[in-house]
Image 1: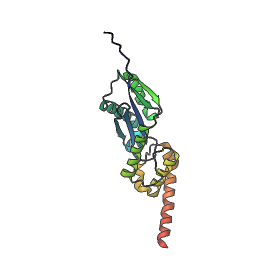
Image 2: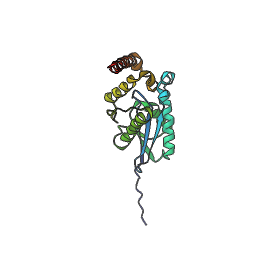
Image 3: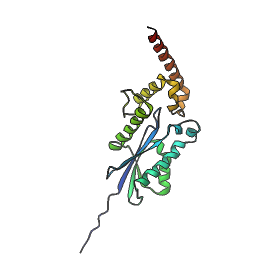
Image 4: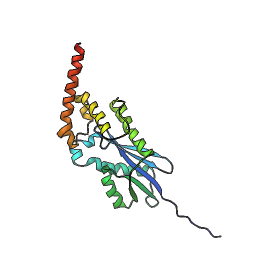
Length: 196
C-alpha cells in the first residue's frame, strides 16, 4: 500500500498588544490560536510605566515573561508551530528571546479578531476599572484616544494622576503641566457655575 505524507501547515499563534502607548491604565498582551479561536490576555500594570520601572525597561522584560506564560498556556510546540508577532516595540526583547531559543516567528501587522479583542480588553479596563465614561473612548488607538484620556485625567487631576504612565518623557516635559492648567480652568468654571 502506497501512503503519501503531506507536510502539515504549521499551527499559528498571533500575539498583539494594546495600551502600551496610551496615556493611562494598564496595558495588555493578547494571544490567539488561529486554528481553534482560543484566546487569552495578560496585563502589564501601569506601575511598570513609571519612574525607575520605566527607566529600567521593566515593561519590556515583563512582556517576555508574559509571552512565555501565554505560549505555555496555549501548549505551543516550537517544532511544529509559528508565531505572528506584532511589530510594536514592546516586543523588542521578545524578538531577541525568540531568536535565542529558536522560536519561528514573523513580524506582522495584527488585524481582525485579536486586534479588536485586545483593544476591547483595554477599553473595558479603562471604563470599568478606572471610570473613563467618555462616549468618544473607542478601540481605535491614536491621537483621538490620547486626548479623551488626557481630558479625563485633567478633569480631576490630583486624584487621577496615579493612573498615568508617567515614565513617558512628554508627560513630564509638556503634558503634565497642561493637565494641571486644564484642571484649574475647569475647576474655576465649575465654581463659577455653582455661584449662579
